[in-house]
Length: 147
Image 1 (cartoon, rainbow, N blue to C red):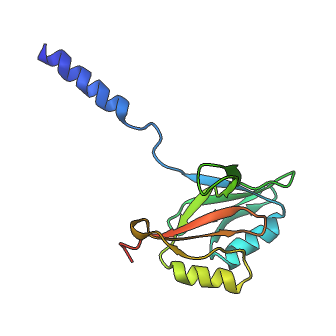
Image 2: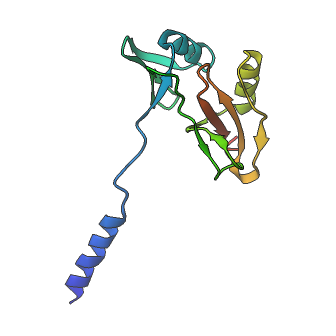
Image 3: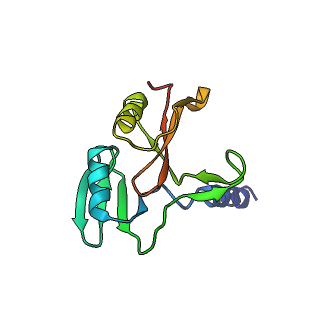
């Protein structure tokens, strides 16, 4: 009887493990691939891994891939929700992590990027939102406990 219970417990533990490990890459719609690649390189300092007519792969500081693909119609990765910061809130699709949020915030402002105020969310760290030239909205976060 103990053997059967042990087997059932092992099965439950295996079944509770998530089947998805991590996010490998993200895809963003852009209207002009060359312009977008240049912006992500120059403004955010991302490295281009591959660029071809079908799209571009950019590398973030931790090695994660960010794909830029030209959209056939004007689209962003944003969506509208009533469940974040009030009714009809334009929600960002990604939150990036940075190690120097004040420097990034300053650089974006100095380069004329749409950027919202830097906010201290206490134990949730420092954050702000910005948009790329196509209007894709992002959140940026810095863990204040590791700063």
